[in-house]
Length: 126
Length: 337
Image (cartoon, rainbow over all chains, first blue to last red; front, side, top):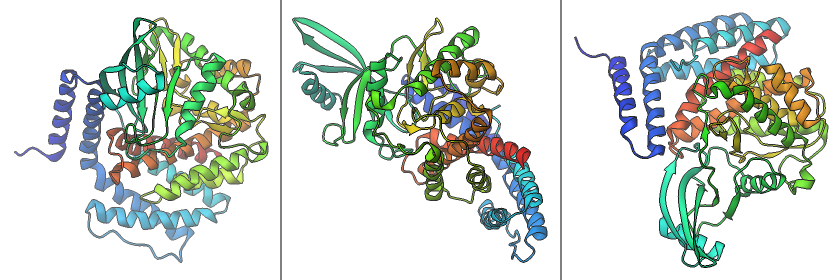
């Protein structure tokens, strides 16, 4: 069994937080605590990052097929985060354009999608 | 930096033997470097020791602000008798400490409530909350002209202040977004299509009045309102909405700023300001607060990603705070759609 990346990050975050009381400068204590929290966020993102992006891209694509059928929608290829982000950025641009001219019913549907997207990407402190 | 700071203050305070001791950087946000130190010098035959704070521009600032804005706000509201640190010296040049800075008195025996803490004020929450919203009401009710701040950014007709602020933060998003932001863009469109009523008056807006930006003591008394760097003129409801924002509510939005119940907070502000928090207008400014938050966090992420300012607080803001405000805005606007 090898340590997974999220395990390594989680354990490193704990170890970094354990150093905080031993730092003499209050600025360093604060900065190190925030760095530990960021590493904890990164551990969770390692596990869920690709899944979030694939799901979000699919949801945006599905709605755009209905409300902007003329749009050329990019498909996911590689599951590398950078590749998924590039597709996501293009889909988001198309969604923003569609939102600008949406009627009331479509506006409601877009906000429903945006609400689901925000919930999926929410970051927990705990 | 000790010697350079001592040389500068010796000249400014007319104390040739002034020396600087115990200079240490302390947490103070990513938009200014904050240091605590002691200045020791002779005055009238006696040795004086003053505990002071230095706020210096970082190599790149989170939100570009007029360097003198924060200092002048401290001067004005210190004169008015509100709890703010006594300003000592402002330097806009780069010669003394490489970047602009100002010096103010340190507030001793007081602490800041972390926005991540679930209940930072404990048994003092009502007492602190009453002071917090009363002070904000006094800021809102004050006359910018009488304070000497009539030239702050934001002056103009009462029915266009909202446009001024929306344009300001939209530009920040335009300049700094690294990926398309459909929630912020949708919210900006909503703000423009559903304008608020004209402002009741032109007020000094602190710009970042919230839990975590004031010092309080063990008795539950607020000793200083901090971080006036985004101060400007505008609709006083802008500050109230920002103070009520759930991001600063310590995980309990029914008690803004982790203090009073929401209705009590608004009533306290109304009594202190002599103004009315019209629910419809306040609701607009609360959506605006979410957009302004997104703009600040997008800017923080940009600063961090481009290494202009790699303070980890910027990464936290661009990740956690942006995700938080996206969710607040999407929930509110989905309900209104």
